[in-house]
Image (cartoon, rainbow over all chains, first blue to last red; front, side):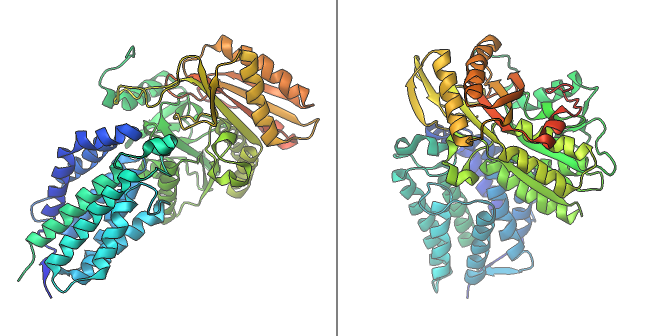
Length: 210
Length: 333
């Protein structure tokens, strides 16, 4: 069974942070169409600060713990605790592992999803990050003999979930104010969540042994 | 934007700095967290600590209610955004005099999450934390779904009653019950005539057309229950009183406290015009106004509009309302 080493894989989180920072304006722009317009600003602030504190030799588990700490102690709002719990629970699942295989990768994502659900109340279809995250976890748990293929399935499921939010009416959060008018725009949380999962899967795939 | 600004990203830190400097006789900044303001005497040994917190932009809420007889420590968030769990935790620690802490906050997704996480963290620090979540806004959900309602200006009465109860030496559970009783006795409604703008965003986050009003609007521009032509002050006031009193359904003879707050850009004189008609409507139902507050108590940046809050009183709440208070936004009662 193929796997990737936990040690040194903290760079995956730095790469994800770079993508989030790069998309600061885009995430704020789509958020601004139906929400406050500050999603990109807050996400870039949190992920950018965390990236500066993740050393070259950090493990994936350590890097996730650092990111979680920044999100929960410095960002606030709703995204701080939601993504903070996501990365905290994932980091605790893998902290003692030398290598991460398909089963532990799926268990890690499941723990992250449970962490989000422990503080938030959104369900699939509410036009939130859950629309990207829940199908991604399902794809991971569906499994595949080839881990590279599995990782591709997870990232694609997240992106399909993100795209599904375009035709949804927001049921939770500030954008629910707009009712029908929230249709036709991607949800900013689902969009950032798909970026994160894409980065996680691509980073893992690039590090797979054999 | 005709606004007093430096860098929009610094506005919250600058607000807190100015606030603490202006009111240094009553409050101080947490030594390790620039997003926590504590009463000068906090923590008071053997007194239950009172904590609140919420997004900025509602000044004088939330920080203005920090002070003796009211809130011991307040967590400060970004504009319209919940404080971090860490700030709530630091506020809890700053308020803890060894007898437990009661967190009194408003029903918003971010605040619910961050208070929940802070409570778990505080439990690890061996601090007993109880919570009361305010849900006085009648327009935000029907009566049978009160748990979904948002907290608005009724929070001020919740802090006052809870804070006074704590100052009397009550237990954490007694303080929680008094604060819960206060918010259960409160009903509020808001009306908006014009939107507000987050400086970092630069444009209004919603629109109200000229000549229209949005009844039931929330403290961050959450949707109201109706958008109609803007009526006369008397018509608006009568409708606000009707919405609150219909939901409240208090027996004639009940004594009440009334709070009318501007949302930031409505002149005080207009608030008094509204109050005059509201008071007649309240008395018209056979209720007895024991005490009234009219002013900018809980705002929404520069939103044009007002809120009405009515709290039913009993002997205990009357005594607690009259207990001494010394915080920047709510002077000696």
